[in-house]
Amino acid sequence: MSRSLIILLSLQFLVTSAAWADDDQPPRQVNVSGSAVITATPDQATLRLGIQSRNMNLQGARDQVAKVAGDFLQLSRKLGIDESQVQTTGLTLRPEYRWDREGQKQQFSGYFVQRSLQVELKDIELLGELIEGAVNAGVNEVSPPVLGSSRRRELEREALALAAQDAQANAEVLATTLKAKLGRVRQINAMDSGRPPAPVAMRAMAMEADSGAAATYQTGDIRFESRVNASFDLE
Image (cartoon, rainbow, N blue to C red; front, side, top):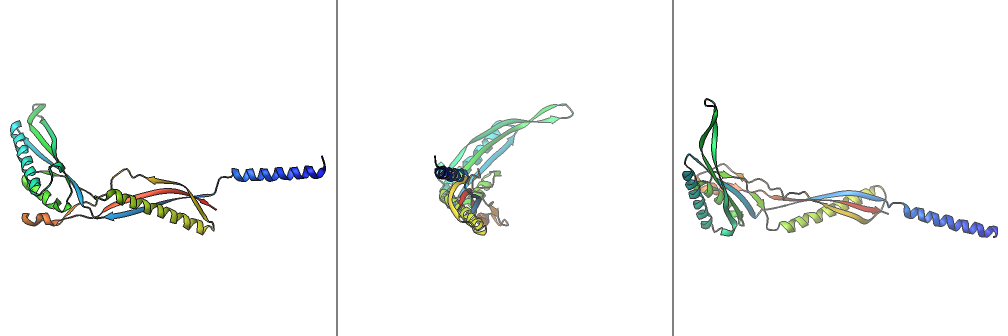
C-alpha cells in the first residue's frame, strides 16, 4: 500500500472519530423555572356549618338540633338555594363524662349531639345573608367559607400558559447575557401545588344592627398560581 493511501485513510479515520466524539457530547442546555399568578373575583363559595347541643336528656339534645336544622333548611329555601346544594346528613352523637376527683371516677355529664351542614353556594351575593340567617336560626358553628370561581379550570390554564412564557423569557435573558442563542425546548414540567387556589379570607366589617349585618360581608380576590420547570438548548 502506498504511503499516500495510508495517510488518506488515517485522515478519514480521524475525521470520523472527531464526528463521533462531537455527537457523543451532551447538548448545551439552560434550565429555568417560570411562575405566574392570576387573581379573580369569586362567584361561588362552599360554606360549612354545625349545630351543637348538650343536654342531660338525649331526646332533648336531638330535638334542639333538629329544630335548628329545620329552620336552616327553611332559610335556604327562602333564599332560593336549590336543595341539591345543601347537605345536612352529618350527625354526631355521644355521651360525655368528666373526671370526679373526689370520687376518683368518671361521672356522666350529658349527651352531645351535632349536625353538620354544607352549602355549595352558586350565588356568592347570598353569602352574607346566609351566614347571618344561619346564626339567627341557632347555628352555632360557622367555618370560614371556601371561595371559588365557576371559571376555575380556564383560569388555571391561563396561569399555566403565563408560567410557561415566563420560563421562556427567563431562558432568553440568560442566553442573551451569556452571548448564546436559545434553541428549542427540550423538556417542560408543570409543578402541581397539590392544593386548590388560595382564597382570601372572608372578612366582616364592624357589625351593625341585625337588619344590615348581611351587607357588611365582603370577599377578596382568589389566586390561581402556576409554576413550570423547563430546559432549552443553547446553540
